[in-house]
Amino acid sequence: MNTPAGARLRYRAMRDAVEQIHDSVPGKLEITGAGIVHDLLSPVGRHELTTARVSRRLEKVMPDGLVAHTGAPDVEAESHGIMRRPDLMVIAEADIEGQGSFDPRTLIAAIEVVSRSNPDNDWVGKTRDYPLLGIPHYVIFDPRTGSGAVFSDIHPTPEGPRYATRKDFVYGEDVTIADWTISTDGLPRYP
Image (tube, rainbow, N blue to C red; front, side, top):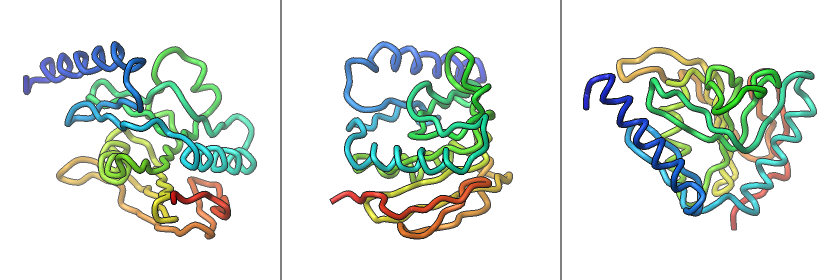
């Protein structure tokens, strides 16, 4: 199945499996080139509070017509065999109006709050997948360490598109996401 048609069939089979089981398994299911990723624990508590605070802070500084959207639907690029569900997406309201998964090329930024159950999904898998999908800004908030990083400036490499710029931050500092700067004061940490 190394042909493009074989890859599409493999992806469709995984997509169908995810659709059939997503309501019966805990956590979040995503698809990458390596297969199905299962983040076992549903986000709760401090993870959700971080997402909510970042969303509210962004919405205060972004212009009308843009939203810091949480929740469904997925971001999907069948041509790459990838389906992801960012914790938070900066996207134009007009791009939310369609049916089905979001086109990843419409996102201004994808923002993830690191899960205790699967931190490599955010730090490794999504730093590989999001530039491949053409998402210009990827931001990680890590409540385990009270730090994070902003990735930007997609450029080609022999392994595929990658982010050229990484700016690390620690909680308490201001962070710039695309064109907007927000505070990270008061973001919760995992115990």
